[in-house]
Image (cartoon, rainbow, N blue to C red; front, side):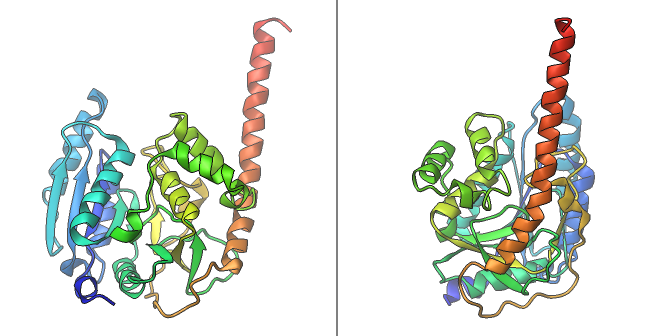
Length: 312
């Protein structure tokens, strides 16, 4: 382990916009973390998108200037609205270029008090393991009991951490990523053997239907054949499923509770856990089925409206 990184805790990058109540809950949970008082917090606040958001953005900015409970708090306010994707990409790049590592939190994630401990332990333990691209704090509420920690190919977006060497592999060019996935016949595996439509999400990003940084982060890591460390029990809860923000994942994910015990990072084989992957695939199956039903329902409604319009 390099003493340069391991001797100090990772900085935390928090991304906020216009959701005051969510931001307060996220910050209060972070403050309750065991290592909060020893950690530096960097807050990136996006700018006003329209007049409707101006007052809410102002409320958030007023609040973040009062935050204490950390070793140091630095606030960076954008003059203009750059969007969540650009905010995260630029913010993470800035932090890793200076500190070599970063823990990333968005304003709708409520963390366990052991979240920072797990993240920092993971960053230290796998600092020099090139096969590992990131540390993640969330796992889907699968029915099967999982190991305390394990690896899955790719990267994820709900409470995560990486090093400069990992983030250097991030490619913002969605079109290039999709072409590579298709050229290498990896789209099925990328979609968890067809159980979740990640390829469609990437296609939508390219088409401008979404501006997801997360799908590009996952694709970048997947194509580089890198692994992410996951906990067997989630250390975060997403509270953003109320129509107030931009998400990645399913609304089912908000039903879990954050794990309130320490997760120990120890030596495990640096290979993908087929047991965990199978459990996630099983979890995705009903979600994908529901999505298909919803799409068929929309098509049917559209067809009926068209028939009614022309008097069919």
